[in-house]
Structures are given as structure tokens and as C-alpha cells.
Image 1 (cartoon, rainbow, N blue to C red):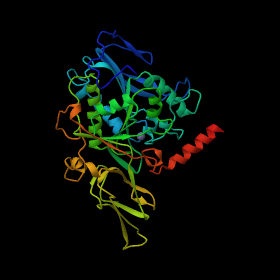
Image 2: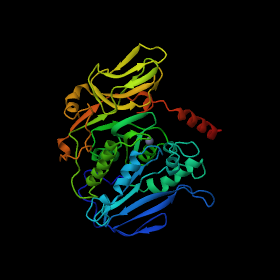
Image 3: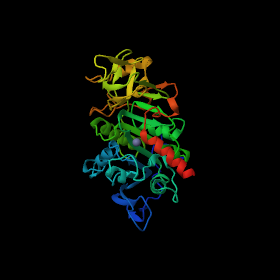
Image 4: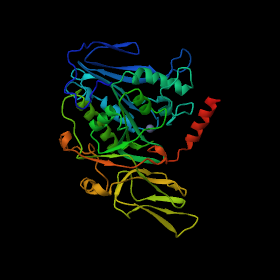
Length: 408
Ligand SMILES: [Zn+2]
């Protein structure tokens, strides 16, 4: 991947040989698309968990890009965005993903964790989180075997990967990209997505992003919306961002649509409940906050008449918010990005509800050159060393038990 420059390369090498490819023993001709069922388990007996992978093998040479949705089976933004991209509105003749004109190969997997999706669960049927098992192990646990299969068929030969997620149960995220900015090709991929908020982070061990980055494969994680929920804005921004990245890589015609500014944040603040009870959120993910404005109120049915407010500690943006009203003291209520110094930029892009208008969430198209973007670095550190580590996840304990069980 070292040779690839997704953003700046003027044109993919058009002189290289471009011919049929094979995916899981099926042949795909240039200028065609084909949906192939990739078994997640390489077995002769029992369920093989076949998962549809659509391969659009372009008529012209170019890179191989993989878009993954539903690694967590209950996160629906990715599955929905991928399904849109595979519709006639995108793949018909003359449309953006027309196989005849596409340069390169695009692989789209709407739901990687199809068994989890069928159970409306984040996890695999053995209770494990696929996104902690990479690069997998063909002789390991069920989910480790799945990770190994995904790694071999969808990750290892990708020139870049866009991994689509939503917040876990009980919370929601405004559209944002997570990326290790020190990994240059991932940074270029993140920029090409054309979104305002980039969280510079190294994800936990065993995640697809961390493992693929270690193998020098550029990866970005897109986050938008929440589990068991489908929001128009998150899906729109995902589709818009993927098309932007493909345009930047010269895989599809047209110029990428760029944001007015780009915030590259390396830290955030957690707004926590000081008291327990019922949480009444006044704002939601994407709300632009002035210092001192009320984010939420906590009341307790056992002690009527008393309420406690949670306020914005400074000017900034709610990038993630709790959606579950059951609250105990110390629980995170909001994931807050302090942006006091650059608040004027946020204020220029606010809708009637006080929400930040993310690039791509409106139909309006504004063309901008890369050098016209105002880039802002926000210094800090992620609490607990991971962007989301302060959110409570009941299954994390189980995950640890599994690790111990495996180690034993
Ligand atoms: Zn996820």
C-alpha cells in the first residue's frame, strides 16, 4: 500500500494490465458487478454463515476499496448506506458506481456480522465482539475463525477500507470519522471523506482498524447514529463520504465535496451524571453548546421536587449523547468536544434545532479545494486511552472473561 497516494495521485496507472478477478473462487469480468456469498466459517458441516459481498469490478484499472457495514450486528447506519450504494440509483449505466466506468474494484459488504444482525445483536452467536478478534485465528474461537476469514478475503488485499459503525446501545454519535492521523495513508483517506470532525485515535487491540493499520492498510472508521436506530442524516453523510473518497481516488468522476473546515481532535471531555435517577436530555448528538447551557436534567421518582442540571463546561459540540434515561451517579451523559477557540466556525453551520449541519447532510453542494479548508488541531488525550472507553458496556466484562478462559 505504501506506493498508493489516495488523495494526491493524479491518475491510477492506466497502463497496467486489467483483467478478470476472482473472489472466493468466482470469476468477475471487468466492467461488471457480482454478488458472491462469502461463508464466514470454512466448514463442511453446520452453518457456514454465508454473507453477501458485492464486487463491482470496474472497466478501468484502479485500486481495490472495501466498504464494510454491520461488523456490529445492531448498528444499522452501515448496512443502510451500503444498501443505498448498491441500488440502481448508484449502479445503473451512467450512475456514479456504473461498473463500466468505475476505475478499480469496489467491494461492498452491507452486513459483515449477519448472524448478529439476525439476532439484533452487536455480538456473534458465541457472545464475542468481532471487532476485537482481528486478525483472527483459523484454529481459535468461532469469532476468531470468522475474523480470520474476513481478514483473508476482505482485508489483506484491500488498498483502503472504510468501516461503518454507529454508537453502541444506549447512546448515539453525530457523524464523525475516527482515524490514526499518524498513519499517513489513513489520514489521506480520512481527509478525502469530506467530513468536519476527525477524532485522532488508536482503537483497542484486535479492532479491524488497529490491526489493518499495523499491516499498513489505510482504514477509517465512520461513526454515525446509534444501535437499533436508523437516522437519515448519518446514512446520508456516510454515502456522501464514501463517494467523496472514491472521487478523491479518481475511481469515479467528479470532484470531492469538501467541508468548510476540519477539526482534528485528539481529546474530549466526558459529561457525567453527578446524581442518579431519570435523565432528561435537552440536547442530542450534534448539538452546539454555549458554556453554561443545560445539557440534561436528572430527577428521581423516589425524591420528587428535586432536580440536578448538567451544563456545558465550555463552548463546544456534543459528539455523542446518552439515549437511555436510567442514570446512576458517574455515568457518562454526553461526549463533549470543547471548541471554544473556533466556536464561530460551528455557529456558521447550525440548523433551527441548534444542531451542527455536517457536510453531506444537506443536498446543497459547495465545491472547495483542499487548500481552502481551515484545518484545526485540538490537543488533548482520550480519557482511558480510547475514544469510547468511558461509556459503560456491560458485555466488556464478558469479553474479559473470554480472554481469561482462552488464556487458561
Ligand atoms: Zn460498531
